[in-house]
Length: 369
Image (tube, rainbow, N blue to C red; front, side):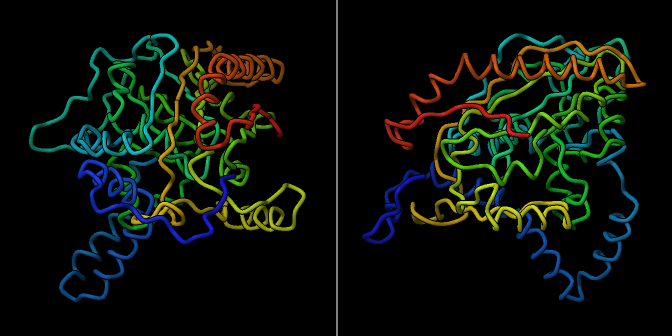
């Protein structure tokens, strides 16, 4: 963890280039999207002029289920806009492909109208490959995988053409007015089992943050502790559809984007956070980063490089009855591939990370659960 300044906060200079200000604004809007969307909703509720719109929207919210029906609803105008580049340049993010992946579709960009940006994915044949990507670690709020996969800021569709992929998040996020529309614009869907199977059936690949909310409590700079040993549901999902491959992804530096109050797994704070997570379904890490106008404290992430490495695909047999022995075998291959990614990239990551973690820092990948 970095040392705190003792002589007051360090403020951003007035001469910061406009490009960096746009990067900061984009990341701020994403980090604050939940708060901003709910604030706008309640503001609209307080203005009688908007009541007919709000009533109609609430009916829409009650019955619209595109976030879990497998349609892969997204807004291509937003995903391909400069917002993605500004977001990725803030840190910056780097996307690395180990090997090319066989495409599901013949196109690299989903067909859409010039006049209507919202699209749903056409259904693909079952003989076409689809992928279940697993991203590690979760970090505080999984910023890097959002940047490289849910936007075209690093050219996902150019590196992996014909493989539209939905990043998955908690089902409860799609019950928040306006925030659910923000998530869907970037192609996010629910992480429920129903949603996963529907997306794969239709032809979309999916990306699951395997460690889940619990892993966010382990996110500290200079540490790479992941929850994987007991997480095998994503393997079962891959077995439930034909011609599906597992692909591990490792984000080097994701845990360095925020500091977090010390919460050793044996501490009372960690036990309290785990209890809250078990009751609410989401974790509450006590994190802090930088501010909009200062570099020392705030809720924005630090400007630290993150390298997102996509591994080799692992063929998964179609076994809808999920035999335990086969689950263990595939899970073992997945862990081996994840460790290969780690061993081949850790030195270059540590060379960069030493500039803010310190020259004596060391790092290991620990699968603790």
